[in-house]
Length: 43
Image (cartoon, rainbow, N blue to C red; front, side, top):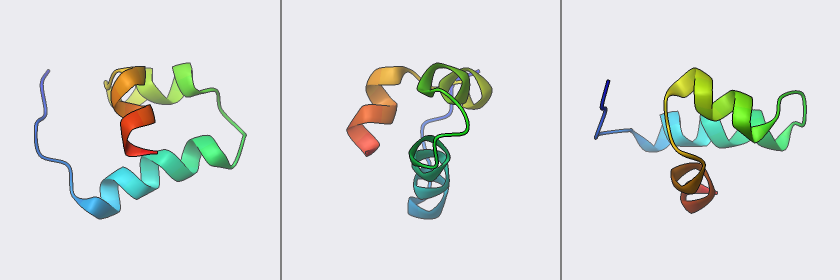
């Protein structure tokens, strides 16, 4: 399922999940159905 429009708040929430260290980037990306490349671009 492709999602092309993420709000700034949504992007921030996803990135903060990774920064708090409770989940791996792989897990976060899988849950939100985004690529790791996109995650790191947002970060």
